[in-house]
Image 1: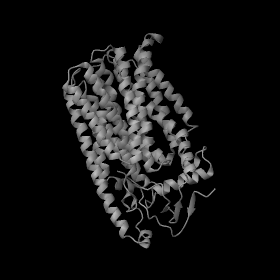
Image 2: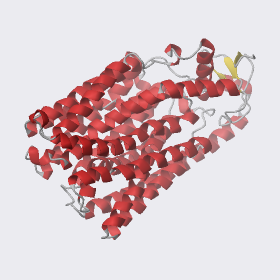
Image 3: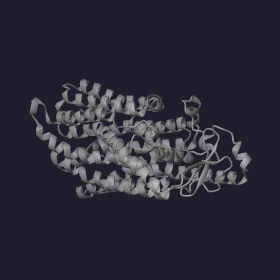
Image 4: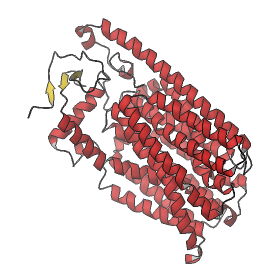
Length: 499
């Protein structure tokens, strides 16, 4: 069989970087030109293996992260707020306390990920937050709950940006959105799963002299601890240490990753210069605003969907079950959108359309007094925001290089998302009374519209930059290409932005 990876000192890629099926050549970090020939059999085999051995673990990490952070909404409906004698304001404070350490931890955690090793750092975070989540089930006072929520945020802060960065160690950019959406869609699965679990668990009321809401935290937290401990043994650090890949498969994947990052001079060590460079990228800040807006929408629905549905006239137990269908639809829509986004490389278009889904949903909830229509509105707003979030994440990861710059860009996005989460904890209930949530709904509708606008602005900016880069490539000779200034990363003329 012909080799999949060949070296040459004179080859040059004459195709556009987006034509991944062609034979391409690029300069590796050592300065040599390498050609990667497409091998259909190898192509299918390696990505199928990584999808089988890495992606399910990552998806489970995020499912448990989202479940343990947002199951407080289910516990509230099951009696947490009355059991600990909390006001609406105190409940909002308890949610807000989670986000302060969460935001602080995101950037340093992402910058430490490579140095410590994701195979050690990610399982440690998972195990620690599982312990804290379990302890929420034994608190007897409001102050005890506040302490647990603080440490939960501290332990979980680096998880989502860390998982996005970790996947970029295994997948080229054009394959990222489907994978990010796969693991992020586990959040919508957790929303559905949490409702089913909560419905069953609240019937454990009185067992061990504990209320039903306490068992939600205890059982779900214990499972997280067990999975965290097991993941030390199954999570590979990188392609080179992936036990399920042969030596030839490792060479192929590494070559595809290098090809995808052609001319970016991926650095091996941490650099403060690259952290600063990330803050100078316009696309980082266009998306940062979109991340903040989506964070408000996402966490408003994640935390308050059970309360919103209960306000439509359902009992506490029935409200838990009624959260399942819209989150299940959200999972399906997000996966279909991710496939389209990867297949046609249209991240921006997906962001715009999914944001408009949210606009439709909130307009329906605001404009009708029919409980059936208001419940139906969740089938637009929940799939909309659960599609927007992973698409923004993949888009941000795709368009920053080298690695430290990318890690910083990802972290900035999630810092903004969770800053939006702080507003979300106050928006419904405290600032906008139940069950109408009129002010909150208007705010979420406007934010959804702004998400679409900033997605369009970012799309237009990246398109214009790609046009300039294409013109520069046409004017550049082979010798000029070889002499291109190192360290340009995504600013290189040969780095084509994902649209």
